[in-house]
Length: 119
Image (cartoon, rainbow, N blue to C red; front, side, top):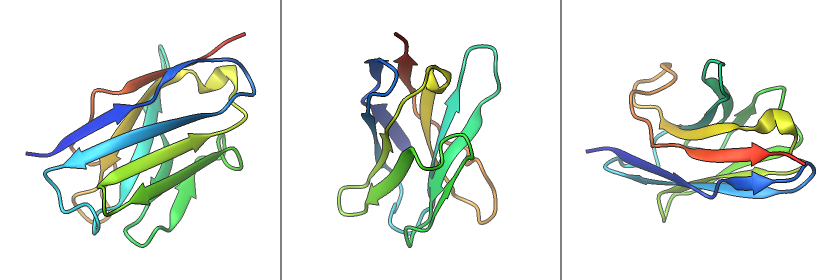
């Protein structure tokens, strides 16, 4: 059974940094592309960043240059390093795994971790 568990969220001030973690189980992991999504109140869930099995990355324009996605295949962990946080980054952040080539998002979601950016 696939399980994704996010952690690391919190209440932050604008300009601060935060690292989110995603622990995966029930999948091979090293051959799977992984992604971070987020959902703000009243908005649709949106892609934040993706990372392939070979660590190629893709970022949404809104976070490019501020966020960095990474993975540790030996630990089956994925990370999202968030710098220069803005109030508009406030959302629940979710981990996702691609299980079918070319299909995003995949069918499995974690419970999410809340990130709130406010002065």
